[in-house]
Length: 459
Image: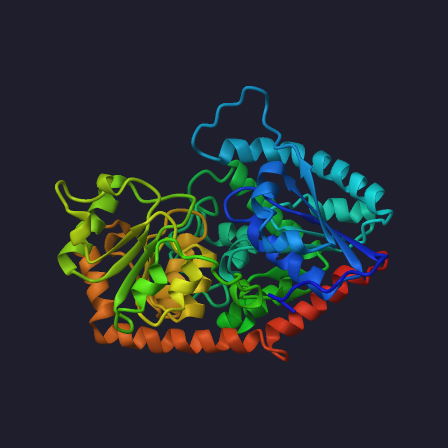
């Protein structure tokens, strides 16, 4: 049903699901994708989507697919910021204020949703970050279904944090062989806050509590496919009541067709040979420092590989002085249709921060990656791409330099290694496509999720 128009809902709804979204970074979008799939599959169920007004107005614009669903209603909650709050540039402080106020704000919004619909909420579907939702569901005698919006490997790290700390802290242990599926990875690949950095920061504490609470959930859902990480998935299945791989979301909930490609990226790609173009995007949250961007721009100019670079900013800040933009063998655009670009035959490599959504989109497009990760699960994703799947490389030394960038680009676009990576990623791409077919593993997992969310009996 994914990607289709919702069925006309019944005149009377029989079930009510509350979806609690985390409004920071790229979390709310994947939860909404899942809710829209559920809403299409269960037209007799009303879904109350609860998050901040800023996040809701962004997700439910008048022209968005979400606005067409009659059985999805939005409810706004305050962001929890004190009056006169001045953002510091780092979201952690704002996240702390939001989380402190969130349980009471969510409870209030759920009461309002129940009053509006005349139906008691029968299930909580939430971002997995909301560890406190497990207690709320217990109080309300409801099933709790958290969605982990990153990959299975990072989820296992947070579910096994106590074990990892016990094995690693105060020792010279460098490997992670004691975790299923981690034999090729090292302690240095773990996200900050697990065994390094500030273990008591708001985000580290949140993730630690989350890992301890998830076994309470009726099911843990994830935007992934079982076949990509079988050892890791089996370990998570043994830790949770149910572990449901219901992705990749870019296949189950494809973007609507482009009404207009203002930057003509796809038309430009049509003029290039297969697997010849470099696509660059470092996501919407963080980008490399100016000296790294400038070094990468020099690498593109010197190597002369054709490129599309999705760059929010002034190109003059990163291009060499006096560089004539019209002479570049590529396009610098403020926004690019990433999914469609990665599915275009002309694209040969994706230079990325290795966020989980981007990693999945690259797999579905069959495009090898060059990774320059920044924080959170991105280093772990990059190391999985490089050492476990063999479908990309990390940038040499972890920092973009002209020499390191040229070396990585030539390896993938001109070397034998690039062809081998393309063959390996094709296998993963085919597994992903099979998983979302009618009898595929992700489709079966989604059907289980529909049953849990809409056929509630008191727990």
